[in-house]
Image 1 (tube, rainbow, N blue to C red):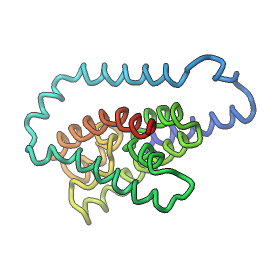
Image 2 (image 1 turned 90 degrees about the vertical axis):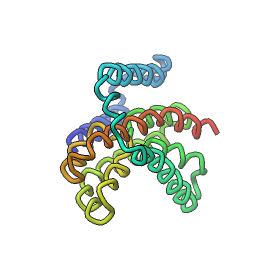
Image 3 (image 1 turned 180 degrees about the vertical axis):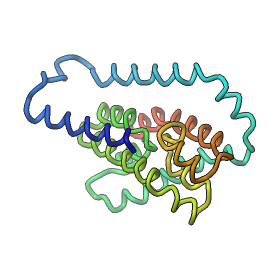
Image 4 (image 1 turned 45 degrees about the vertical axis):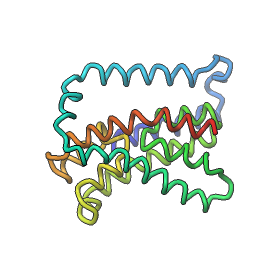
Length: 200
């Protein structure tokens, strides 16, 4: 929760700085968004590469539970496609690009801003932060009414970092490895799916 509030605070600070013209026009500095994205992906790669124990622990999972990331992706995209029917100002691909963020607001909002502009990038940022906050606050109710896998699916790409503590507390220690596996695969899908739907 604290991490999400910090991200929102920086976002609001950026808007204020832009409105007040306190910073130089970043568009004159070249492709800043692309360079930031490359740096972000490099850091994610280093984090995964340094944690060899994480990859080994994935082999212990029940093969049926390994389908959860796929179900999360399919379910999110299906719900996003249905929601697009009620948003006449937005195309199906706009909505699918936003939905493909799966809670990974830093990466998806940069990519969508790059391909579709800052307005949709802002929508992606807020939609993905809301997904994370919903999981953080709603995990106990999700477990109570839908079972221990529900907060993992709800958390999307965040289940290997920010939402992991609440998932561990509400779903139980038995679901830690699954939560990490789920977050890893959904996280990995974000740049490919967001780019695919943004380019369509």
